[in-house]
Every structure is written in C-alpha cells, then in structure tokens.
Length: 207
Image 1 (cartoon, rainbow, N blue to C red):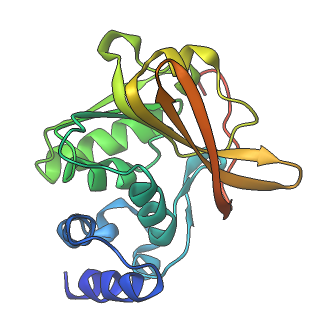
Image 2 (image 1 turned 180 degrees about the horizontal axis):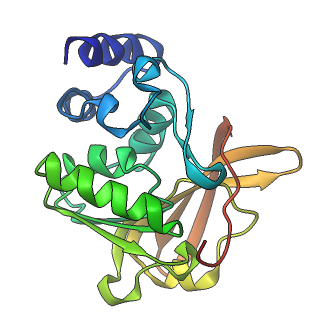
C-alpha cells in the first residue's frame, strides 16, 4: 500500500482533499481495480482502459467527482451510473452507508463484484443494466453520479433524486465535457457548471 499512499499524497498536492476523502483513498488500493497487465500503471494519475471502450477513471477525476458530490453526514445513499471496475464505488463505500451502482457491461459487473467480495466491501450493491434506467427500487437517492458523459439528463433520473439531493454528471457541450452539478431544491433543479473534464460517452442498453 506504500505506492498507493504516495499516489494519494501526490493527488492531495494537485487537488486538496478533505480528511474524509483522503482517508477513503488511502483505504482503497487502486491496484486492485486495474486490468491484469496494467498493474505497473496503477498509481499514475491517469485513466486506464477497460473492456468495451470503458475506462477506469484517473484518481484525480475520482477525487474531483467525489468532492463535488458534497458528501456530509446527512447523505445516506448514492447511485453511480457506469460502475466500470468499481474504483469510484469503492471510494464512495468508505464515505456513504449505501452505494448502488449500475453497469451495462456484464463482464465488468462480474469482475467488480468479485473485487468487492475479496476486499470485504459489503455496502456496494451492483446491478447489470442500462444505467439510464437508474435503480428505481431503491430510490430516492441522496446523490446520483454519472461516471460517463451524457448530452442531457433523463427526467426519470431527476425523479430518483431525493429532495435537496445532488446529481453530478459530465455534460457534453460541443467538443468537450463539463462536470455539472444539479441540485434539487423545492422540486426545482438548480444547475451549476464546474469545470471541463475528459470522460467516455455513456451508451444506452446492455452490452
């Protein structure tokens, strides 16, 4: 875990982390979530490829998305759309009591479930499905996170967001993606653009 600790310290210099988020990163070894053959790149601040044109996000991106979710003690549940290797969900599992994640690629779902089992992460619930469906059975969620870019948020997902909840997503804007925060206040959605970032585009349906 020494290399992971060094990565977290470097990350903290680039993008200052709260003590809670820093501790979550220290508890989750990124090497456990990278594909076989790429372990030597586990601790660099870069995204890495997964199956079907998916990626495991850069630790910097994960840190930013986690921070922009504005997690506090009132947050009980989060839904992640596009779980990939499970790295983001694992980080969130150390911060939020209940984590729900949807992934459209069945191979990634099976691999992530095995990782969670091996790492004894028991508060992540993972489903193989089209992420655009969300997970209505467990709604409403205090937080919803897109780990892939999308042109427009489906209204059905705002319906799965709890009052005073936050939905965070990279929104396609021309030839770039902009991390955008949506707050649900008195049944109104307040939109705030935060910064540009690079994400793979979301795909509909099951792979």
